[in-house]
Image (cartoon, rainbow, N blue to C red; front, side, top):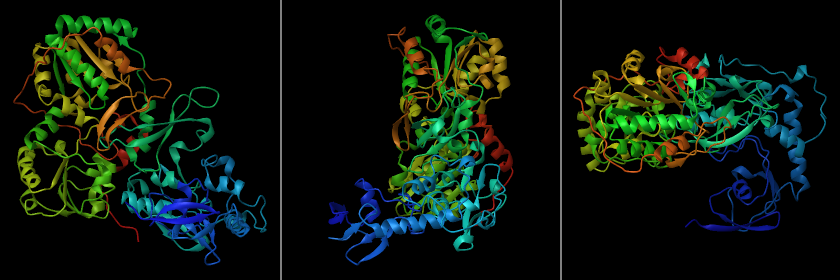
Length: 632
C-alpha cells in the first residue's frame, strides 16, 4: 500500500499519496488549479508556469506540477492568495499580448484553454501597447495536407513534442529556437511522408489552436456538435475514443465530424483521420434485389432460406461484428445445419491451433516488458497503439520493417530467437507468416515453455472472439468458396468484406449469378454489397452496443449515432425463428487462399479503405520506405 502524507491546500486537510505532485493531489480532490503544459500521461515539463501556488512553509511562489507532496506542507492557490492571482494574471497577460485575437476563425474556439483561463483568471484588456504587426513571429509550413501549425497561437507548452516522443515514439516534431521565437517544427518535410504516424494526438493535447486538423478546419464549432464515447473496432486493440457528430438539424449536417482520443491518448490514424468512413455511402435500410424491403419481410425470407436449405448454406462471418451478432448467427447456423467460416481461418486460426495456448496482454502490461520480439508485419501498422508501450525498449525484429523502424530494432532469425532470455514478449502477426506459419509456431512453443509471453496479433477487430467460439467446428474459408463454386452451396451469407482480401470481387460477381441467394451484410452500398440479392445494414463505431474481445479485455461499444440501423436487434429477431440448436457442418480444404491485401498504416481493412483522408495518406506513402530520422 502506498505511503500517505498529510498536507493542507487552502486550509483543507488532505491525505495524499507520497510521490504525487501538489497539482495532481489538488485535481484529484476537486481543487481547480489552472495549467497549460501538464497532462496526466506526459512527463512534467514545468514550461507554462500557470499552475503557480504559494508554499507557506518557504514563503515563496512555486509551480505545483513539479512539486512533490511533503508531510505537513501548507499550500495556497488562487482561491486564497492574492499573490497567486496576480502572478497568474501576469502570465496570461504575457501570453495574450502577442496572441492573435482570431477566436472567430480558430477551430479551437469553445474548447481552448487560453480562451477559458483568460476569461476566468486573466486581464480583460491588453495593457501593453503591442500592435498587430508586432505580434507576428516566423511561420513554419509543415507541408501537410492534414496538420496545420499556427506559430502565433502556440504557448510553447511542449505537449505535442512530448506526446510524439513519449507516447508514440515517432519523434516527428521538435522545438526550434527559444523564448518567444520558439516554434514547433517537423523533423522531416513533407510531414505527410515523414516519421509522423498521423495519430492526431498532437492536435488533441494542444491546449490552444496552434495545431489543428485540416480535414476538420472550418466545418463546425465544438458547441454545435453532439459528443459520444465508444470503442474503436478497426483493429484488435479496443481503444476508447470520442466521436463528434451532427444531428442533421439547424446546427450541423448529419455526419461524423471528427474523432478524438480520451485522456488515455490511445488512438491512431485509423480512428483519428478514418472517421469519414462512417459517412461513406451508407447502407441503412434492408433491401431485396435493389429495392427497399422491411426488416420483417427480410427476416421471413432468410427464415425460409435457412429452414429449407440450411444444409446448403454457407456463412462467412466478419471480425468487425460484435459478440452478440456472432453468437446469434452461429446459433442460427447450428439450428439450420449450415457451414460457418471466416477469413481468419486461413491464417490466424491455423497459427493458434499450432501454437496451442497463447497470451493476450493489455498495453499497460506491455510496459512491464524489457525485451520485445516482433515477428511478421509492422506492428505499428497492424495494431498501432500496441507499439506505444514498446517505445524506448529493446526490440528484435523478424520480418518487414517500415514503421517499426522507430524502435531501431535489431534483426534476428528464428534460429537466433531460441537463444533469447529474460522478460521476453513476442508479438507475432500470423497473417504475414505465409509458408513459415508452422515452423514459427513450433519455435514459439519452445520459447513459451521457457517463460516468454507469446502474443498473436490479429489484423482484424474481434478475431479473438471469433477464434474462441469457432475453433472447434469451423469450416475453412477456401472449402466454403469451393463448394459454392461447385454448386454444393446454394446460398451464401457474407458479413463485411474481409473475404475480398483473399478473393477477387469477380469471384462474387460470378457467384451472384450461380447462387440462389447471395446475402451481404455491410455498412456500405458500394463494394461487395452491390452484387448481393439481399442487402442488410451492418453497424460501425457508435452505432451498436456490442461487445468485442480485445487487448484491452472485453470492451463494449455505445450506440448514439442517430441514423444507425439496429443490426443486433435484426439478427436476434431472426434468431427467434430458430429454437433448436444443432451442429455446424464442417468442410476442410487442402488449398489455402493467398492473401492479396497487404496491410498498411493508412489502409488496414475494408472499412478504412472507405476513408478519403486515409486514402490520400496511403497514396502518398504506399511506395515510400520512410527514413526514420530522430528529432534532436
